[in-house]
Length: 122
Image (cartoon, rainbow, N blue to C red; front, side, top):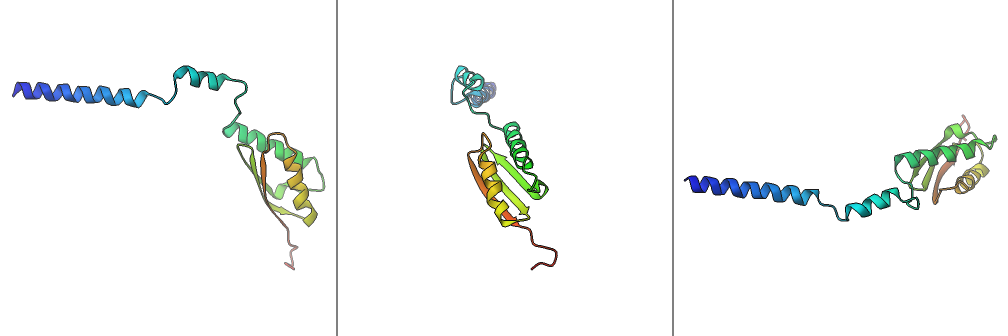
């Protein structure tokens, strides 16, 4: 009985050690991931970069006083920018898209802007 119990404890310990060892391994060596993270050529991604790009797009649109940026929503993710909201004139839809494409760091633009209807709805 003591042998069976000792054997069970040994097997359980072996399983636990194996599971922790497998769980802690990564697909690449630690030195390679550290080098990739510190490399200046690595592209900046993540929430912070997305927020910075979003602010840059809003800043570029705000430079054009004829466009009301208050009704425009900008969502940026890894260089892709999606515009939604309304503008007062049909010509402004393409203009805002062109302004956004000119911002450094923007790789693509999805322009979902529409023309604001007057209060009468016609």
